[in-house]
Amino acid sequence: MIPFRDNIPSRRYPLVTLLIIVVNVLAFFYQLLLPARALEQFVGLYGVIPARLQLTVQYPAQVLSVTVTALFASMFLHGGWLHLIGNMWYLWIFGDNVEDRMGHFRFLLFYLLCGIAASAAHIVFNLNSHVPSIGASGAIAGVLGAYLLSYPFARVLTLVPFLIIWPVVELPALLVLGSWFLVQLFNGTAAVATTTETSGGVAWWAHIGGFVAGMILLGVFAQKRPRRYTWEEI
Image (cartoon, rainbow, N blue to C red; front, side):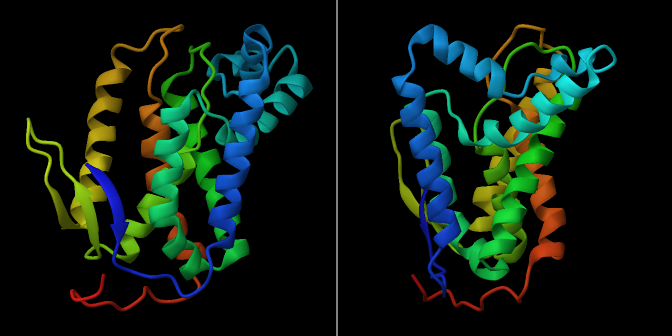
């Protein structure tokens, strides 16, 4: 499913959502400027590498410093245009309402914590992986989790791929985001049995961890009740 828009206008300008998008885009353009070898080293330094933690006993200060930096930096880096556009698209559609409910500063803190929780989940389920993990999808998954709890019956205009027919229909957020989470859970469970030290791909457990963190942290960061809306709004 590919969402286009929801039917809940935000009451305040999504300043932090827009700022996060701008930072991600600028960081990606910086990546594009790097030569291939330099880019590989850059991602290796600022990506989250679970196996790096195995060196904590020998080099505790160095590993801790690099890991903490990577936890924050990795959520602003991307592996390609589709990776970037897909993440920013979801953030723009669903982030404004979550930011509206939390307020600017609270939303920023919420977003960063969801990103950290996502990386932590990825590490737990990929302890021996030497592959750097980058991307904003874990943090954005937290936004989706918070949106699902806040507006489960909001309508989302969605493209539904089905064989040769791709209809655009309005679906409740519960179905759109709930099915998204189930796909992550199914693939994450399947990946546990097949992940190797050098296998890459999608960090499914980062998505799962971020989504669950967003649902939990919503109760901590929400300042107001969810917006009231009717089925006639669009």
